[in-house]
Image (tube, rainbow over all chains, first blue to last red):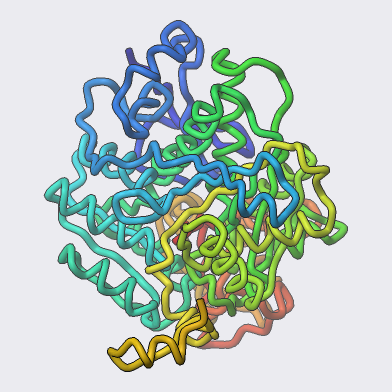
Length: 412
Length: 92
């Protein structure tokens, strides 16, 4: 079944053939994949999904990869949806869930989009995979390129966290460390894309790549027993995944996979040190997102010029969600709160999400019975350095290897 | 003269030229001059209010003009003005 009809501009509706391109020639708007929903509707059922593989590829019918295309997979997706009773008790939420996407093969949400992107690129004749990245994407692209046997170029800011550089380099990609911030790396790659025969996951093959994000929401809904939550908290970088989660809910409804027509509230989380979407949300012109220079420890979401920012605010406003932001201190507190209550160690971006969740809960946003899901998108070891400088070891004591010393120094 | 760098999607307007030199002293005037030479650019770059379109990024010597003076930014002989579609990056 050919389910892909082409590409279409989200702004002006101009249509294009399926190809590695992401920008409308008419208006520069972003291009999206056009699915043949009528054909999909005849085929997709809950049972068919439930009988699929124990990975995000159980939603293959809803992804831009035809049936005949071999996928490049490391077993991404179908990550745990954890009912967070202890964190919920601290925040007054009786139905709080965490989608723990740090359990992906390279420990971040990025494996979902990269698996789709590289599968598409390999099937369409690309021999080299590339990306502009703040770390997690490069990590994932390097791993999946190794898995697929493709040449790989990753472009990263020169001052990336050491742990991220190690976990990228081990896969032996070509690492181009750019003396600039992420937005500058991204701009360079946007210009390079015209003069190289490479598939840049997050640039020219972005329409395909982005679709992989939807699987987080598909899985969440399936794991809730095919029920939509009341509200979803999502970290905002470019805003790309936020838009796809909204699309995922549309698709679940249109394809009859969920009952009811109550769309969840979509709420975004940013770090105040890089909050262009939050700034616009709270201005008179929420769809006019002005760029900022990022300065935050949440570097994996530090995009100062987010392409999908206007759509984030449109969706948040339309669904009754909000965009909230937290300080650097609140990010670290969010990391520690999640670890202390639920045994989950998340990176700074996850600290932003949990920080915003906590801030909104304490401000009285919920009465306590709502089903709230927070997307935890990356593992704490990626940004462990931010905890080294805070008092994270308050309960540590050092003793001699004797019972006497133990009894003297340890309170129990 | 200040020089524009034209991205792939807009080169049909510039007869395939990757770079175009113009005579101007600020960015707004530079866009006017570009449009006078290759009609259509102004429409693609500016909205009905005359501001840069949402999906267009313009860099003056590698600096995003929205972070500075915008269309009022001064341009000189040696400046390079890059037009880049606003894609965005992937998180992480």
